[in-house]
Length: 316
Image (cartoon, rainbow, N blue to C red; front, side):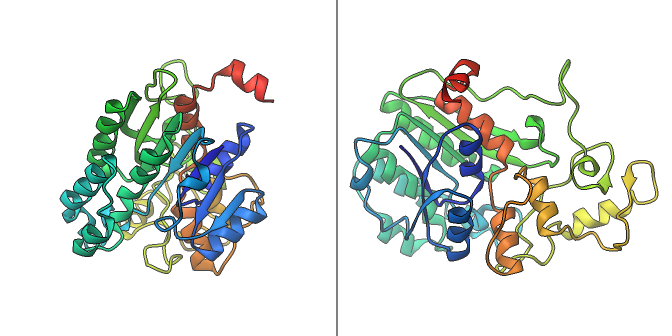
């Protein structure tokens, strides 16, 4: 069994493509409906309150992408100021001491403590393999996780990967953690853009407009708490405008703004065509923009679970 905390849709779609499946724990109603209608087993709940014993003794893999607004480039960045508290909560949980309530109350951003939540599950379940992802500024936290996991006998690897290097038509850098109790792990090697490899996928080749020679900039949930306003930030849009009218840009037929549709954002995230997202427009943009890109999730899962060509043939 693969247990998926803070269960968006990206990890699950990658697992599906690999012939695997997960049990996702998620609180947001629209995200849950998106998952269920896509065929992914889902438990609607608060991950922080759900008991781990339900899965004890039968968990093969564990994947997580905790919420990251407080650690991102935009906003007040209160999560970065909370990092010492998050580090303490992780260390406490790694020794069976649950201080989430006290430390969470002391955090400037109440969401910061969620980045420590996976350690509670790792301590209790001891899965065979683990994969986690978040914004690059969280890499020191993943390195702390890796140090604890090595103490428990896991092989680990951490680093910042760009999803464009794995065939995504979008630049999207993410800090990842990979760990395994049953084999040695290392970060997945890039599949695109290197010597003898296919070129990076251009934005225009994915959605029909935009940059013709390079991937799209990072797609976000929309720039507001409710999502959807502008999946590309202001600075990004200004940079795009400077390329309009050049060979490096393909115009958008009949549309004169740079706001991608939900379907276009989904394509840039590597989702399969016609995958339905639920909720209002803002909620749909958040579900898409906050997801781990499918090609990156695929590469990370393969590395964590030790899936090679032979295992995939057997799974098929």
